[in-house]
Length: 399
Image (tube, rainbow, N blue to C red; front, side, top):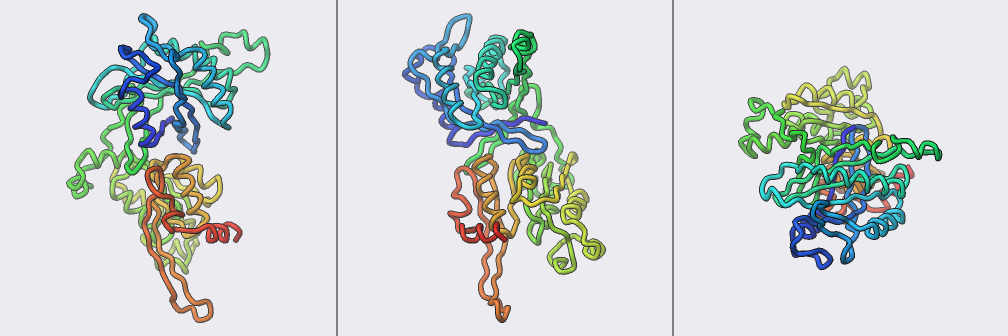
């Protein structure tokens, strides 16, 4: 399972100001590094675990100091106060974040120094013991150029007094996992490499098959598409077309979620499906997984299919592996679930579709609505944009 890190654009601006803006009152003006503690949370999909940034726990004067030969030091009192804060929030963990003075340009992820690693393992082991098993502990570094790296520490928790004395249950038993990518979500979306040992921009794009789109947004833009994991919730007339078109566009990975089957009644809007698949009542995710594979232009293209409802845990979980979700479900309750997930898990949701209503007695067309809306940090929610209302969502859930 890979590890990612996510924060909002507003959070990133706050972090940047704290690390590189005017010197905070509680820290010396000549200190070459700055830092703070913050809460974090986790979101676990099928193949990806994400550390989600929470709130900065503001230090008091003297809590964060630069000490020659030791580096940046955070006081025991600051850690104690931060642990109490995290303990009061269900599921919250704790991370320390600090700056490095350079480089001042480029977004290459910074490498933690040996003193960084040595102090982190001791401090975060004590934090993990205090918070208890299951709560995340992590560390991060950000540099002026915008580069960032994040790593999670996992410790063995003893169940007996004898185990507590064993080396593997102490700081030396730490397992360190680097986040491969950092996602910054707001009105826009940035995805940055966060692991100093990896290269996010591996060239999986096949430019001879995507020449027209590469001319539109450049080779760098095409490479970004090749690195995206994009989810599609609902494979009706809209979602089915998107599965093929996203694959042709050069997206690197698709996650398809739908519980329904193809049949003669919906064949007229099932682009790419065959008559034999309709007669056999083939599962939709199987049909569109085939079509996406046949249409893909990315050399490392992958597609995963889940015959589930997005309104249930088993259907939502695969979508937590995604960088963006295309909501194409007709159900108002499914839309409500995706709407909430966009903010809870920092995954933008682009919702689109058409609703037609008829007079019950005559079946004559009465009114219709088509819309495309984006939800997530920096955007109004789908409910606020009129995509659904509470009454519709409740009726859909109860039915």
